[in-house]
Image (cartoon, rainbow, N blue to C red; front, side):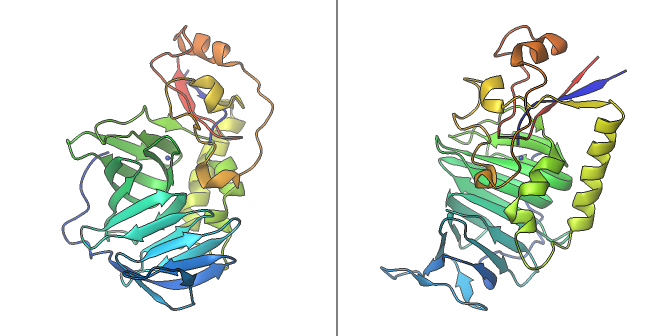
Length: 291
């Protein structure tokens, strides 16, 4: 019987469909606290306004405990987390994430986009996903429902299922290992998912993905270790692991039930920097299959 080991943690590749509409502008559909806009050519920011049109390369900046939601003409939803700076680019559905976290929801068939952040870039395809910058460069992607794919300019790609995460490393030439996370704990505390007045159109599908993983946990097919990714994968992942995911707005970590060494022994790795890597983030864990 296969057992899934969830470690304490908190995101394959094809380009967006050719028919996908350009993501060069969106309308502000919700503002929570401190949200500012720096229009192209301006030297100072101004408070964003409801129903204001944000066009490439205007920059959106949010403050602490602040959020915003933007809706594009093709109904793609962009949710902006706290302490985030980003802008749309003028072509190819590209987004420049300078810092912080974003949630994207695209209606099925509308296509994904290219994320650029911290010296890393990848085409990301998926219906609902979160991307978050990493202080040391690069970014991470987690798929919340369905399947997704991240693709680099060199053709390398990673396929992700709901509840899986991957780091896109600086330089844009490689990924981390794909990690399985405790999706329920991420969703329960994520302000990008639940911190707005309206539910995401895909919330029912997200809940189903959570229920599926919870069923595995209840039946013993999965185990949540509570081990922090920073401790589990020291030296393999960016220094802040998943701790910046959604800026720690998800739930608190559980006390560890397994040490990193025990997890590696279960998986046959034997070394703290074994080939499976690890997750990150207070209270959410990577998942690993063992025989």
